[in-house]
Every structure is written in structure tokens, then in C-alpha cells.
Image (cartoon, rainbow, N blue to C red; front, side):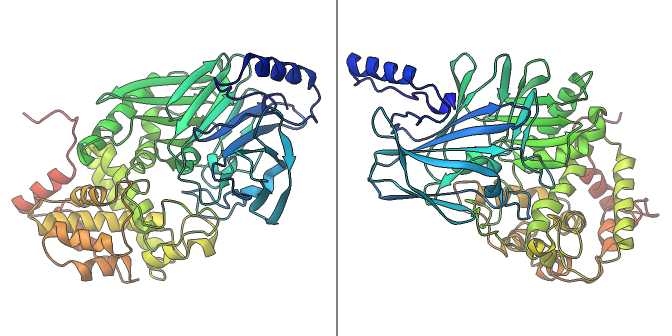
Length: 528
């Protein structure tokens, strides 16, 4: 393995003689079975990744160097059993091959004993080494419900972090770097700070393992990777298009639509809590979309940007709702014991609600179309066979039993969408149109934005009551914790609409004003 035998960092304290000796030894080691050579790196945990495009055995070759300043006698490493956002068991460890460990102290590494006490864990006897380097490979792995995991094609590679990177138990909080060793004429995209170290080699930096794992990576030949870049409030945004077959002929339309989406959410939430953001568009790819801290991977067809606006608005809003506004169990992550929360309906369904709000505020759907969308959604919900059998809370809590990442009994996406609708209209009505669900989101963001812990299981209700200025507990419980009929006619009536999204007769000025404020666009021309 060429790149796992190379010297990573050469301390300046090495004498010329030692450097010459190392160079000589490196030149003498030529076979793929020779022991890799590493020098310790005390600046953090370092990952090196090399794609191998052998058509008979495509794989990622990865090595990770863990400093061991306390000279601990044992190092335990694990692979996640699930990927955040994809709430079902995937057991990524099963695709790890040929895991070995090496004493990283000094010029010549020597092998260390490794045991495999359970399917997700490897234990290394470190012999008190200053640092330990672990080498392994990962083959092509099956996709999750919403994203590719490790996809290796002849001209492109996509990596979903939890499917590729091991971590040291109890050390996920340490800073990390990832160096890519790219084939010639390839480039990479990742939503992390970067440094070009040499030709065909680039290093990305993350404050901890969670951030690394939550930063998808695409590597591809320059001829098939197209990146559109735009800036909002000084923040760089990239739309990276890649495909094994199809092409997006004109990506400029995407830049325009995505800019509106970003600007609309900024006006709703108040700021953009990242330094850069990447939309990864897997053109013709499998699955749907998976959110990440500072990016999203989305499988799209060859359609225009407006056709995927709602999809993009959903995935983008996740950077707030679930990545920063999150249940306490969803960060820092437990990658081995699947976390359980009653609030996935809020994380996913209310995000879906905001996707529709955003496309209206971005003027990507007409006002009439916005009202019709809610009428159609209500009627579809009432036709769902299980809508009276499972509460939103139960659907969320038992999703791991369902194994579908969308809810037990009924989709928490759909039920949460309808809860978002009712909560927003109720708060607007209760506060005489002075407050809305936007205020709930901003307050939750204020409370939970990392490094603050996520919200408690009942905290959403608490914040709803705070924003509304009165106790809406019974209303909240009816929506989220019961299987009773949702009060669609009542809530839509606050906006002067019926349950089909059509205007009611004899609406009051207050109803009209609420409706107009709810459905306002930031971009539509103002009426004369």
C-alpha cells in the first residue's frame, strides 16, 4: 500500500543522518506486504485516505494515526452501526477489511496485536507506544435509505463518513485531519477547511470526529465534477454536481434557486451558522437526501432547479433543525447504541413544513399554489390508513423497530408536517399575528446551538408555550401525543381558509392579514 508506507510528518528535530536513513529504508521497501512506516504526529488524530480504482477490487485504503501521549497499554477503535439522519442499523464494520495496527514510534513501524472482541470494536495492544497507526480498507458498501455510503466508480468516489472512518473509543472529541491522496487530474469537495499540501494531495481539518464523519466527501475526475459557487452574507456556498451517466446541462439555474433558498432561511433564522456549505448533487444517483452539519447529499434527476426546490429547502433547513436544534441524544452521537427520541416528527416533519414555507417565501411557488398545497396535504393525510393509529411521538420513538427511517406505524415526516402547519397557525392566531413558529425555531436555536446540549424531550412544548404567551399544552399534546383528529378546519380557519385550502366566505380583516403574513414572499413584487 504505497500511501500507507509513506512518512506523514517529519519533525524538524530529526538529524540529516536519520532523514537519509529513513529515505534509504523507504526505498528498500517495495512490496505490498512490507510493514508501513509512520512517524508520530502529536497535533491530533490524522487520517489518510487513498482510493484504489482496481475494477476487480475497488476500495478505500485508510490509515489513522492516534497519538498516545499517556502511553496507554490498550486502544479500542470502533465503526458506527448507523449513520446520523438514517435511523436504521447498517453495521458499517462488516465492510472493514484487513485491519492492522502498527507501533508509530520511530522510523520503522512494527506490528501490534489486534483482537476483535465484538462486531463493531477492535482492541490494540499498544505496548505503550507514543502513537499507534491503524491501517484498513473499506470496499464498496450498500447505500442507506437516503444516501450512498461508500461508492467507488472508475472516475468518481463518494464517501459518507460513518461508513469509512474508525474512531477511538472515548476520544471522538479530539481534533482530526484527513489527507486525501488523489489520482491525477482528480479534485475533491468537502465542507471543511482545507490545505493543499502537494499536487494530488489535500488535507481537510475538523475539530472532532463527529464533524469529520458528518462531512461527506466527493472525489472525481475534473471532467465530471462541476461546482457552482455563490456567496450569501460573505459565506461561500458550493453546488457540486457529479454523475456516472447523466449531466446537468445548465447549472446556473441551480445557483439562482439555491441563493433564494439560503437568503430566505437567513431572514427566517437570523444568521448562517457556518463558514461554508456544500450541496452535493448526485445526478442520477440512488436514494433521497441526507443532511449533514454543513452540507447535504441529494440524489436528483436531470430536471431543472425549480423542480427540486422543495427537496433542497428541506435538506438545507436541517442545518438548523436536527443538526443544531436537536434532541439531546442526537449529538454528540452514540454510534453503537441507537439513540431514541420522541421528537423525530419535529426534526423531520417540521423541517418538511419549513421547506414549503421557504419555497413560498422565495417566490418559487405562487400564493394560490401555497394554499392549494396545504389543502392537498390535509386531504392526503385524512386518507392515510393509519393516521388515527399512531401518535407522532410513538412513530418517532419506535422508528428503530420499524427499520425504515421514516417512522413506526405512520410516517413522522407526514404527521410532523401537519403538526408544523397547525402549530404555526395556532401561534399566529394566539399572538394576534405577532409571533409564529419562526420564533419557536429561533428560541430553540438560541438554547441548543452547539456546544450547548440539545433540547429535552418536553422542551419543544415549553418553548411553544413561551412564544404563544399562554399555555398550549393541551393543543400540543393533541397534535403530537394523541391519535385524535387534528383540528385542520380550526387552524386553517385562522387564515380564512377551509381544509381544502380555499378561501372562506366573509373572512375578517384579521384572518386576511394572518393569511397574507403567513404566505408572504420575500421576492414577489409588491402590489401597487
